[in-house]
Length: 115
Length: 453
Image 1 (cartoon, helix red, strand yellow):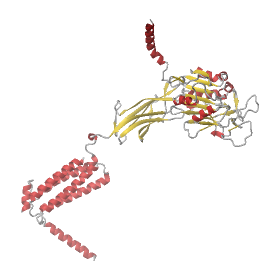
Image 2 (cartoon, rainbow over the protein chains, first blue to last red):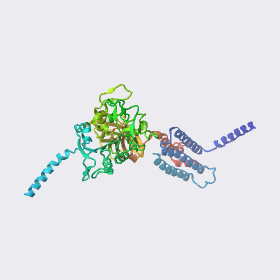
Image 3 (cartoon, rainbow over the protein chains, first blue to last red):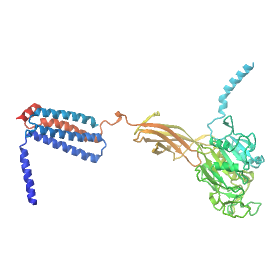
Image 4 (cartoon, rainbow over the protein chains, first blue to last red):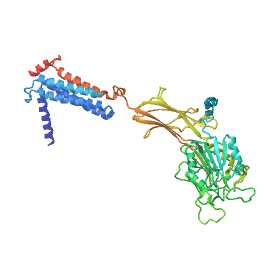
């Protein structure tokens, strides 16, 4: 039973990896960026737990900046993904322009709140 | 002509005014004019040592009979005397404008009082004492009796057990002088106890634990109401306005006979040529009439550290210096007061800072501290209450404001990781579109074209 499970999991990861290799590089870069953003957010939370929550506004803006950009990057990825038929009619230029504009608004707020 | 005379008189009085007012210098806290009320003018001679010692110390004594119909403590709203000595235990009703309320008003306005009661004490004197916080024995025939600490008299052989040789003094240099009173104090009179509800009254001379208050000529039928060291022979009160009151149950204590008498306490081999009365009464009268134990605090100053001007307001977390000068009246001049227990509070509902002041032995008390991280209307408070000394209560209001918006730190070191993270996100958002293996350019059109393919 146990062996079956581990083999199943192995097969799952295998298929996942082979499927992911087929992903276009640009999407992979977006994925990397999302992982990086989430990782940075986690680091900040750990840092806050150690140092204390004193410049709380800075902490909030730091973490929200990461989370916010991660969310926006995920949105971008959904929109520029060619497999996704939902945004078939949406030009990637348009998706990218949305991404840039949202990032601009987000970081305008973040910079004001940062300290 | 008459008009001319009048104008000359006016000019003269105007020019003399400063000189006249100098003679009423308020700088000295010592009393000058004392009114002595007597039952009988013979007291003037029988207690002359005490009165002469007061006169020689510069007091102006005004002797009056207690039922003098012209008696008055004040005229046109001004008090005529600084102190009142009531050597009139049996007076039922004062003459003139004086009554219980007038005496209490006199004390309430900061003047001093000595009350000497006696076995013949009237209700008036007893109720006056009650107002001052001590209760005399209600039994009119009761005297303080002590079968142990009585004085052996030379002439009377065994001695009189109502003639108390008391040596249970309060331990206070301020009240009784630096020189220890060696000889016991002779006391013959009535007992009183302190009112437990009054925190200002002090027992200066206490009866021995074996004393009691009863009628000496009759057998004790019931236990005496006042016994042991709860009996006070001499008590003092310092009111909140620093008016001082001395109350004793023995008028004889001040008499020449007791002053000069030799004293030997029963059971003690030591015989003193002179009783302790003179020293005790003299020292205590110095205290009562503010020759000793009078403090003043002046020049309360505070400023930010490194500045000299007193600010109208502090900011939270400011460093400040606080200083105050405290002087003690020595009877002739103001001398620096040296103590290591003067404290200042920074007070708003409760003390936020309580610091002991250090002094430079010249009367200047100083400390520095940081304003707490709390804003509001604070007070600097110096509350100094020590046995025998006049109490000092200073307070000075000072507002404390929070930081102004531009007084905060621009960048906080602890927040650098957060700043870094935010900027990394901005740069990352930019880089993820440009740093691609196929293209090195940053034109997004290029990237997008590739995407489309």
